[in-house]
Image (cartoon, one colour):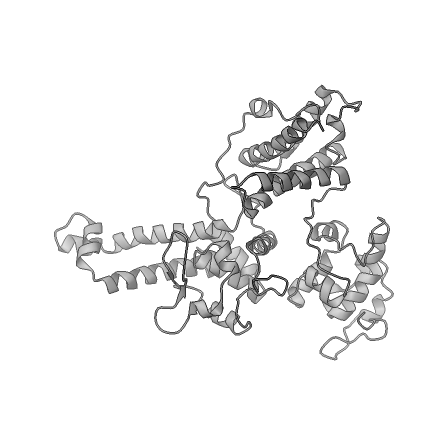
Length: 434
């Protein structure tokens, strides 16, 4: 364990942190000056105030790593904020590298306490993943998110996250009561989420209950008929919903770590997919010269070269900090993080920036950064046609598109596209008037 803050109140720079002696011994989260502590002292603060809170719930603070949600709910948000803002690290890394309490937690945090329900949901996801050839890991994560969202809402509405007992053959709860509880949960969710989101959550939880009924674990599916009762209008997961410019700017302003800035540039500034971002290697980046780019040997439904019209400076600074993959991982066999990690970082950054979990009724996802890029490019094309309208008039052409295609060289077209796109992206990332 790191040296105790009781015996050493100096920061990593060797200077004493003001107020530390005055606040020790720490008994509650309010006693701890989180932002004034170095990582060793934060470890002592964890032992002093976080560990006892975990023990009060019969949890082992050395093996049961608390989630961000638990830390925030229990008054320890100052710890995660200090780690992110002042030490450029995550609680997961702090847990493993500074506290030394073992391997990082890899299990999904359902945010529910009922073990049987949680295990049943996990078993269902495993069985569905094995049976459905078209279920990608991303699909699995999406469905798991929706199941967890319902379970948490059910707990908030009814005070329990036991979803199994109301549909058990031996329960004292009638089928009518089970159905009523389910619909009350959806009504409760209607106060917080768009209809499209609730409809997709309904589909996920209905399929789980159907699976339980088929296996004779449940006697009734309490979700049946809910879609008719509420009349939800469900939009498709594939709707082309994009981040708005204000979302991009808020996230970029919030990004403190080089990793997060690079993440957002790659998604929204270059229009890359989460999988492409996860596997980015510095050898793919051509940052010298007048036309910087990202080079791919193979790429799904797209060119092998992606022009970098914005963010080359961010990429260069990030490359100076890494050696090889832009987002390396010591745990991964590939040497780089998985797309799911990119998604987690994206959502963490979006949460910190105040970007809503739903945009136009569709759950927020990294792909919306790529959609933002496409929307910006489409708008750029329209602005270019307006720009060359004078050329069209001089040539006696009624069509700006014809003038653009026939009277400008390929080099000039490319130059104009880059110029207009660079200006649009710059406004989105840095200009409050974007």
